[in-house]
Amino acid sequence: MALTSSMSHSAILKLSSSTHGESSSSSSSTLFMGAPISLSRSTLSGNQSLHRKQLVVFSRKMSGLEEAIRIKRARELQGGAEVKKRPPLRRGRVSPRLPVPDNIPKPPYVGSNTLPEISSEYQIHDSDSIAKMRAACELAARVLNYAGTLVRPSITTNEIDKAVQQMIIDAGAYPSPLGYGGFPKSVCTSVNECMCHGIPDSRQLQNGDIINIDVTVYLNGYHGDTSKTFFCGDVSDAMRKLVKVTEECMERGIAVCKDGAPFRKIGKRISEHAEKYGYGVVERFVGHGVGTVFHSEPIIFHHRNDKPGCMVEGQTFTIEPILTMGSIECITWPDNWTTVTADGSPAAQFEHTILITRTGAEILTTC
Image (tube, rainbow, N blue to C red; front, side):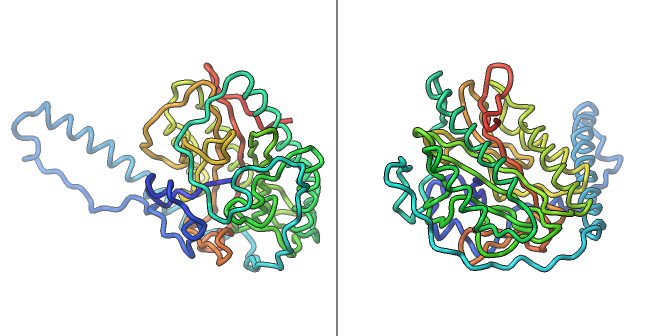
């Protein structure tokens, strides 16, 4: 389950349910803009060696600028024309919250509508807690796979939510999203242009839809968090390509992870791959530390960034990029959760919880 990154770090630690669901987003994602640079011969006067070095720096900056402009123009020309225009997503009826048996252990935030603060501590595990993380993540993966088998035209996202909750409860676990900051359901179901945090409702899935299902379970005091975008019926080639590349971006982000690796390498690798296909990488929503606490540091940016810090062996966090065919700007509905692309273009997301090892990363949310 993604976090929002539209605020400064200090503000993130003070999130409330009202600020989490801003009615619109104007992300600081404006692509490189500036006036042309021209150099005269006088520029080279004086210390020739120094100015040559400066020119090399200018050249590198211009090269990056030109590449960014090229990518931006390509995306503008693409304009999502390959995708058949679908009716905009509309909210259906949200049914009452389903009960959870009293004997199921619940996270400490249950019972409060206030969005919990983001823990500033990294979640680093010993062998015992790693075993518990593996169990929670393996269950989350099994539940997600089951949810995917339910995806078909005419089923409602509410029906998917009900089935998912029952499977989690039957396993002796609690559905982590239920009651988190007042979230009313046990799973997030984000359809077509919905970036994330879609609330299950009475809307029936349509042939050609794509749907991200985000599952988190709380088992024996540990959260396991994962998501995947599924196809509903006959999905267009353009939508299939978006989904495929999004999964590849997540995999490439995971591939750079290991003890001592800088966090910023994740966003760099994801952005490089997404840009090859003209897709945007959403900046507002981020990955996060996960374990005994649902959301903690480190905050994982999926776009290019200069975030300091390095990964540590035994650490667990999520990588969960969201890619769009068009704008990466977004609008949050009045329910304070459902967030859709500002231009109505499709979005896709994939997520794994990973464990940092000495030589790489272990994907925990597999079964």
